[in-house]
Image (cartoon, rainbow, N blue to C red; front, side, top):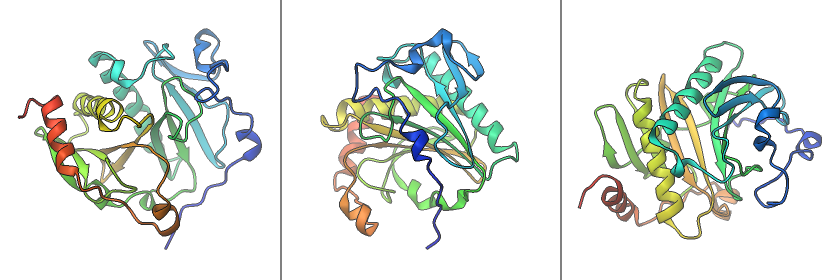
Amino acid sequence: MRKNIIGFNITVGRKKPETIVNKDAACPFCEYDHLENIIARRGEMTLLENKYNVLEDSFQTVLIETRYCGSDIPDYSKAHMHELIHFGVEYWFSLLDSGRYKSVLFFKNYGPLSGGTILHPHMQIVGLRHVDSSLMYDKSDFIGMTISQTKNVELNVSTMPRLGFCELNILTKNNNELDTIADFIQITVNYIMKYFNKRCKSYNIFFYRIDGLIAVKVMPRFPTSPLFIGYNLRLRPNNLNIIVDEMQKLYFNKS
């Protein structure tokens, strides 16, 4: 089985600040007027080079979503959520189409089990020079039971998950539907953090460009199953129909 392997700089990683568990530590993203290596600003959002470039042969950037450290996606106005996704996707596409990188990651970590270190809401866009994007996903990862669908955008829950449990997918037939994608992302994060499981305090968002079209996966995070770590076994829960029904009632006025 072919695998992507990328070097991780331990020396740089040890210097990274941590504010998720260590809540008394100073937040580097709250020093809004003293941020360095800024690439672009849009409203209260800031895109900058990552000071802690831990991945070898890469270009790492951070998209600070808001000035407000204690907020997150469920708290944003629709207008801010739309602008955030437009801003992020535009820069992600610019790196994808630049020819400088073999693949480009666009993702978000939130919470103590997400793999992140900073509480302040942010996303990351990372150009990788030698990583094969075709090994990063399988198209079956996005097959699922439909929760809601517009003409060009579908929201579903995975029946062929990458890891397991409630993986929510957003698939588009038209990359111009960024506002609808943003709305569905906000709905999925709200559901995961407020309704899915009271023990859930973490999630990830992963963006993909597959056959030229945007796909998004939103995943609640818990301690990773040993069956996946040891044997690559994905877990498909037996309550997917309940998740679909609950989200339809909560967000799409279906009884």
